[in-house]
Picture 1 (cartoon, one colour):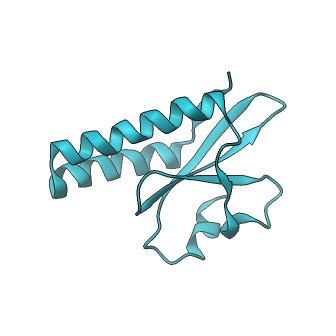
Picture 2 (picture 1 turned 90 degrees about the horizontal axis):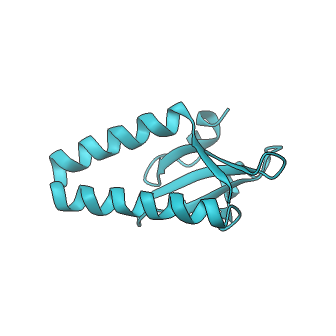
Length: 106
């Protein structure tokens, strides 16, 4: 099983969306969102290349992949086969300007 590591940006975005979700949509919706994140995290450890290649990051040296959390959010990550590690890079709100994703991922 691959190790799943969250980068600081992804951790910050997750926290921000959980807080915002709780305030705007309530506890049940926030728990559902968090449950989906936990599910994806567990699946990535078993199937690290399950996500689709992220077209907005196709020019990168690493192959960034994405998994839909829900219709508004994607979890962006890359897999290092050498270390058998999934690196979660960001949680992306798909309503944002698409080209700004490239600027966020260094």
